[in-house]
Image 1 (cartoon, rainbow, N blue to C red):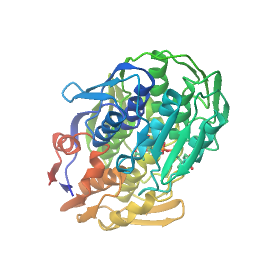
Image 2: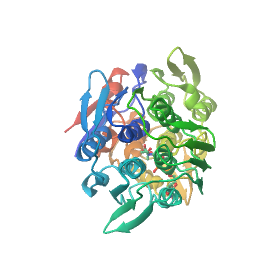
Image 3: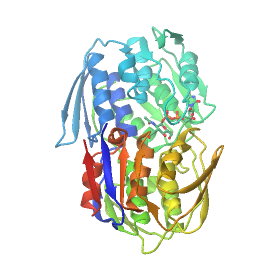
Image 4: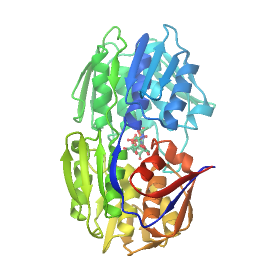
Length: 418
Ligand code: EPU
């Protein structure tokens, strides 16, 4: 198990550059399955989840070549694809489920292992299944696999109970090659959905309304491979912005889109940070201890649940008390027990966490249980006396490329332990 060791006390200052979004690139890689030939993706982050998705695509029959220095990935998709996503890969990365829609619509069949619950919650798939069923697929759960079949999908009206990111993406990718028109109501509006729709449109798909609650897709006969640049990772950019505010630092984030972070940045200014848009990103400066700020996580354009641990960490060292409400993943507060090892004062009750800020935390060994919990614990460690060792750093590697190198570049005393 890998670990990240940080010594508290440094004020983060300098600049970092963000690459493409994990939660977009994995879906763009799945979307490549929709067209025979070579799709090239740019701004591909050097994270572990990209490797897992590449392995999954290889097992489906694709060849995948990565140029780490150039941050590109070339996926060559054959005419005939396999259609099975095995448990050994799906259990390592839940996002594997996003091959379901592309495989059903392109191959007419998909056997995808059920991912099960994970550290942040139960994470159902009912909306994915309902959407594909409405489009004419039969979907059954057999021996731990979702087994879907549809010689030909047809368009349908799909009304989501909740704007699920994954369900919107699977239904959207299935609809682009279906017969007729599909309408997705109450669709997720995340920038990553817009990114996926842009790539699909460049491939020749007819998609309207991505970024709004209603997406309309008119199915086409076939798609062509394209080159596409992944949208910058707003969660990584926001993590650096929060880190700057917590450490009373001055950090410029390159290749970031402040417009994708509006509410989160608004909260940081309420905490006392000065935030400026720059030519290619943003700059966050803080010259005092942050004020405690209430946070409510919601689907986009609300504050992302993927910021919840980082905002709890900020409140743990802020002046005052704040309420953090989690509306997406019921188990995401689990990391609070680890934060308590650093001396944080956090009480949870159902969806709510009451955080009373302390002037200083106290370094200790802690364990990351998921990507964002790991980031939150490292940020807290930057504001703790002495040494904090965050075990389970492989979770952080799943979502943050070169995290330790970036911390060091910003002046933190940080290192990776094997
Ligand atoms: N849900 C259902 N049934 C469904 C689908 C979702 O009940 O059929 C529930 C989930 O259990 C959850 C809520 O709906 O309570 C939202 O889930 P959603 O489908 O929107 O999330 P996801 O697609 O599984 C993606 C990101 C997550 C991010 C969420 C919310 C990827 C690979 N993952 O997950 O990212 O937190 O959207 O924005 O895109 C992370 O990066 O650390 C991460 C967990």
